[in-house]
Image (cartoon, rainbow, N blue to C red; front, side, top):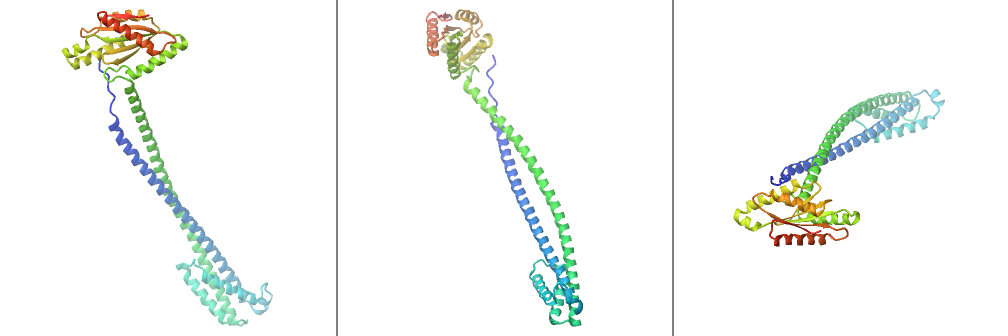
Length: 363
């Protein structure tokens, strides 16, 4: 029988995957942080653009209102007296609008020349006095013209701001979509690699669980697994009344065989005997290495006598001219696993003292 195959060492191959998983996670977090910074910048620029447009709209409205007020001041006295707002109130409104325009902080290079002309015209208007002289009317008309030009410059500035903001937002959206796509791809790669690492871990855990329940030399169940299965069989027999035959088997003169042939030959004999037991028994039979050169079998259904006859036939197939002794009993409903095991062990002891190379059945 071939030796029990040892599991492949996947720890070395798993380490690069874990390292790559960490690297992808770091990249994903970096891209997420970069995306958040980009989103914050986009929102900040959008808020600043909205604020600028509101300020430009307000200043444009003030310039338009100043133009209208200046035009009223430039009317002839007969027409000015019939206007809805008295000339003195219009003069105060012009002064208020001029002060508000001076305090505004929206002025750019394109508006500085029209603003300077407007302020110069306002200075001349103030110097013209409060009467209805032709010089005052001319100064008022100059203020109106300067205010109209300033308003036109502000409108052009607002239109340019809108175009620029739309272009910037389009570029920002492209960057965000690019970052989102790369982040999504990295997330998918991270998820796939994480799933592979989890599958790898599950395989390793299953292998270690299998190793914890199997004998490393022969590949059959070990003593720990045997104790668990025997306990389950005792519980099942007590509940259902099913019969289980219990076998304790021991190689004869194994120590002398080891001394004569060497430990490697002894290990080969143990592996060959375990393979013979597994291959010859029914699939539902549990074969375990109980310890040293001793094996145990849990056989559901068949009677101890039938199992004893099977052992006698099997004895002729044992390799290397070795022999074994066996004790057979059955797991009685209601008794503990240890009681049945003790009875099988006593049957094995009787076979040993009866000359070895034989099977003793205890009903």
